Each structure stands twice: as C-alpha cells, then as structure tokens.
Amino acid sequence: VLFFDLVVVAAFSQTAKMYQASPTWEISLFVAGCILLVYSIWAVTTIESLVSPVETWTHRIIGFVQMAAIVVGALALGHGKGLQDAWGFAALSVALGCSAVLTGLHRNAWGTKKPPTRRRVILLTLASVIFFAGAWISPNLTLGGVEFLIFVFFLGTAVTIAGALTLIPQLVDSSSRVRGHVIQERFGLILLIVLGDSFLLLLASVGTDKAVPQPLFFMASILIVFAIWALYFPSLADTEISTKLGRSYARLGAHFLLVLSSTVAIVACTWMAKTPTA
Image 1 (tube, rainbow, N blue to C red):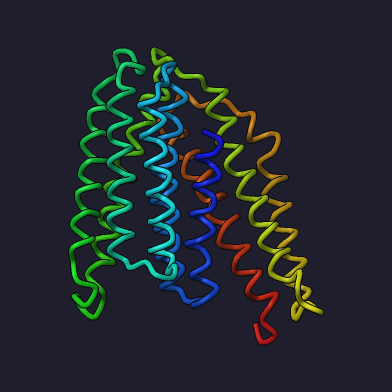
Image 2: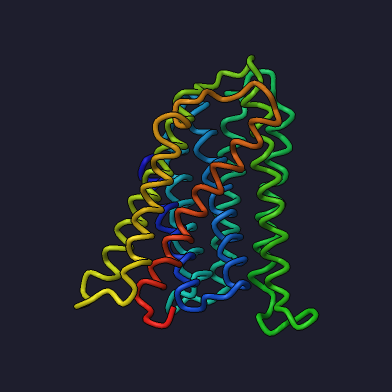
C-alpha cells in the first residue's frame, strides 16, 4: 500500500501542474476537484485495505489496475501529452470501479456494520458509470458557455465523495475491527510524502537556474512546507480517531485541506519564485 501512496501523490502533482501553465481561479477550482477526487479514492482504498485482515492476489491485481488507471487519469486530465480527456474519464471510471470491487471484497471486515458498505459500493459504482459516460461526451458540447464535461466531472466527484464519507460512521463504531493507530499512521504518511514531493518540486524548479527571480517566494515556499509539517507532526499525527461523528468528518476534511494546500500552494509559490513579474 505504500507504493499506492506514491502513485496517488504523483497524481496530485501532475494535476497541480496545470496551475503553473494557467494560474487562474477556474483552473484552481478544477485542480482542487481533481485532488479531492483522487484523495477520496485513496481514502476508500487505503482504509478498506487496513481494516481487512485478508489480502490475496486478487486484491493486489485489482489494486495494480487501479493504480495504473489513476496514473492515466492524472496524465489525461492534467493535460499530459498524447492523452485526451476521454482517456482520463475512462481511466477514472476504471479506478472507481476497482474501488467498488475492493469494497465488496472487504465487506466482511466491518463485522455487523454493513449497510454503509453497501451504500459505498452503490455510490462508487454510480460514480464509475458517470465517468464512463463522460468518456463518450464530445468535448465541444457546452452548457451556458462551459464545457459539459466539467459538469460531468464535478457530478462524478460529488458522488465519489459521498461514497468515501460512508467510511466515517464505520470508523467511529467501536464494534468494527478497525486498527485506528495504523490508519492514523497512513494519513500522516501520505501527508509526509506530499510534503517531500513538494519540496523536491521546489528544488528541481530552480535548481538549473543561475538565479532565483523571486527569492522571497522561494523562501516562503520552504517555510510553508516546514509549517505544515510542524503543525501536523507529532501532535496531530498521534491523535486517536474520535468516537464522535462530527469530529471525525471535520478531521477528514482538515486532513484533505492540508494535503491540498501542501500540493497547490507549493506549486503556486514555485511558479511565483520563477516568474520575475509575479
């Protein structure tokens, strides 16, 4: 599952690079949606795998297909060369389909608390169908001057988020066989990988330049990475999963905001550090 984290962080970085090419509020919103979608897929797959004591080659093969689909989806939606949006929607459909299948395979790990699992399978399957339908929609189709595919993307993302949120009631239920400390460790690990990737991106972007056009933003970027690390580790990383539903929802949302800010803010600061007129 550690390799899965690396793939997910690479997808974060690939989609966030769109901001460097076109630093606008519209692109920022789309990048945030992409990261939220991949984060939701990561949360479902990671927590399901940690809760379940069983891991077979069937799980591993499905996980590999999911990782490959996430990479293709990030390359396509991140405006990678040679890949169209249709490939991105189709790949995300496969990734969500894999999440639905893995959730079904792990259904017995939650003990008697199975209704949320069934809802999660249904929602993830529905999201997969929505993205699959998006692969067949023409990119020239617009609604109110906006590409119709954008509406399809955010609809599929919203359904995916709804599916991921069904995990929370099961996590706070004491009867579930949940290894809370291991889950918290993985949440800290994904953030640590994101921070490391952001730092490498910052160094790589200015490493070949003779001078840094905006040294102030360069130093600010380093401080942001350190500040996020200092905020989360070690106090927040060691906090146990709350038994209160509202606090658990809030913690998941706050963790996502840390991941989002660690990815997008560093990309923005890197762009400003390299742009003399920023």
